[in-house]
Length: 190
Image 1 (cartoon, rainbow, N blue to C red):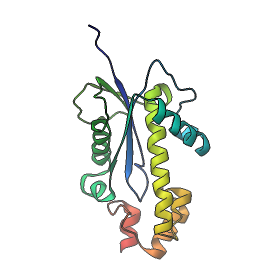
Image 2 (image 1 turned 180 degrees about the vertical axis):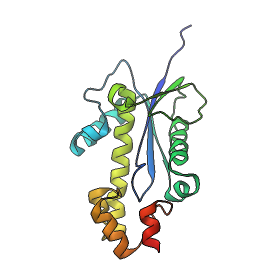
Image 3 (image 1 turned 30 degrees about the vertical axis):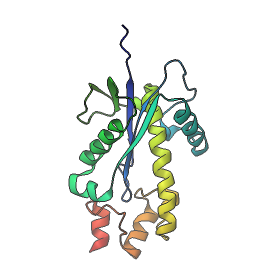
């Protein structure tokens, strides 16, 4: 009897923004069907990420997205909200992993053993795949938020604290997707 090993790569996108959710992904790749060109999502062009997203979803044994909303980030803090979103992504997988590889140095409590890997999205294909799925999903959502909340520039900066975003925040005030526990948002609320 052979025991199948399913290793899930887990990564997040959106810890630094002032607005929007933190989005995570968990991916179990098929060792018999490797995907060429996987890398840290930040090192890939938007076009390349979007192409790889389709390939990952088609060829992975399992994939899942998780998220934590701005309210959860405000209640828990960004680290705990990120770990919660990672747990949600792993628990959403159609296949239960036997091990999880998590990008960074902090890991959620999971039903399987976990190994953290700093810069894992640059060395582990499953983590790179997770970083791509999370980034594409979050970026798409921020494009929608740009239409719902015009004037903030979400389509360009995706909620990160650029000079333009901070100026818009001061001029227009925060939206419901802004993280009220983050200092620049608190300043805009005064």
